[in-house]
Image (cartoon, rainbow, N blue to C red; front, side, top):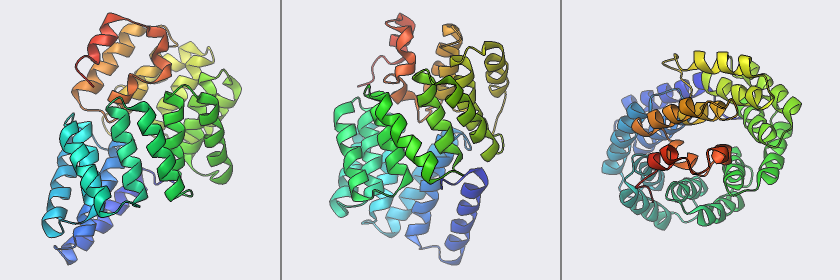
Length: 298
């Protein structure tokens, strides 16, 4: 099951204690960066803070152990989110040359490829990560998201349906299943799934954002808008801006969607670059304002 807000916080605290006990414990420093990566993705830490912590911890880990593949891989992820793709890909090449079968590093590399616009390569790499470690939720979920962004939402839905079946207490499984179901017009399933996710995640703003999208797609516009508007005022934990933007598309409020995407770009939201491939934005078509947001990205 994926760690929630308190679980990730506790993991960081324990790794910090390990570093205090042994300041040269490189693996613990890298693990803190890994936890912060997920805290950023889920809206538990602001992207700017996550970037600062992630690079500082991986730098320290690599000073202590220059051949620590996980540290190179996590550093590559943070570099790519911050738009330094050259350094990011260099870090991934180093990580995977040190450990070609480091499955999590392979999935992070797939993420970087997707940010760089290499959708076909990203999908192929995600399949490789799943083959290396087929039981990791991260890899199955990453593969599903890449399928979704490559025009295969039905396949993505079936993968996440399997996660719901196998991990019924995993809030993210229910929430992300809700995204795919809502997109495919399975509105009752989508709303029910995201309601379950909210219950399991104790009203996490990031998970509630998935619910607002399901509500909007189901035609429950007033309810979706009221909840989405309230989520914009949450500081931490917070709703990832790129995900929140998607709710306003089925509401027909393209101005608000674009405003949130602009905020996501400015704060280096880890979901921003991928948003240009998100099929939920298709109705914006060739809106010049949307194209301008992604101008200059590979």
